[in-house]
Length: 111
Image (cartoon, rainbow, N blue to C red; front, side, top):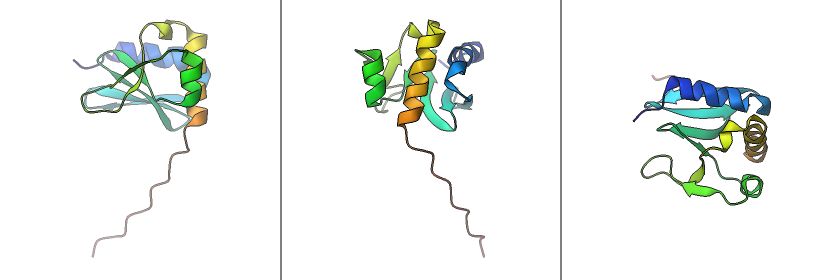
């Protein structure tokens, strides 16, 4: 089941205080970016935040789960995203702990 656009827009609004939040649709699901870093996935109308040590401490006892079959475990956030301040804090902390996105090298022209 694909994620509803309305649900994704709601989550993005809830996370807005974390910084620049954007999202991109991929295969019916979404990748969530905070300041150009992928911080979460939204799959089947469920929020999965990338695991970081700070995120683990912030959540306390996170529920690990893969966002899709074969994926590594993320922190599944069940209802806490209803609290704007809490979810923005988690997303901000996650973005701070993740490395900066690497710049892609330009491709060489084909001959």
